[in-house]
Image (tube, rainbow over the protein chains, first blue to last red):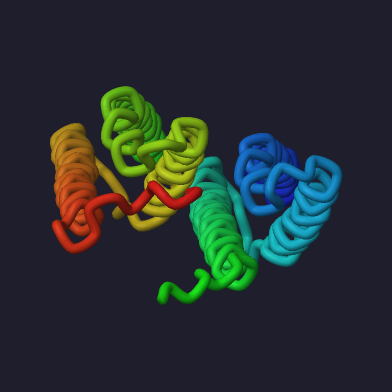
Length: 134
Length: 127
């Protein structure tokens, strides 16, 4: 086969990476609501809004990275090199997505910890001092 | 014969993905108990964390398998095909085993750290 297979590679790469991004974002933020409710003390409105904003950011970052990472250099003239290049590209994209997922989880847990600290601090400040015991 | 490489990719990909999915499901299933113990009063958080950890594990490992496809040498005979496939699948399985033991050790150490006598009830203050 003498034709250049790069267009086929792009045609496979784009749907796969976009679908992967969509799937991971949906799973992450469907489950992320639990953390958000914890962070915002059960105030549902603001928890949902923050969750949505995080989701938009996640989509922007990852789709942007997928598009920037798209370009395949060289000449693909048989199926074997096509599979190798595609595996390389999609594999690295999947690893990147996994790292982003763990980074988001880290952010959730950090927020949870900070919220807990704030709650303890509030309790400390707002409890009246014990009356002097003579 | 370049077809042999493709056959190798198919067998290697299917076998290693099957192993990864199986091991991941197993750890997901039996690891929930440990996470529930770590997050004592927060069963919901433990279960969602378990789910997200499973997805992250799949992404990283299957991504690694796909990336290694581009580092194969040219395969000319059936013999080298067999050697390549067994070596590479063995490497993946070894890697999974090492990661599994690191995971078990970290779960154990976390539980030990959280349940030391100086900090006996870590989750009792509104976690």
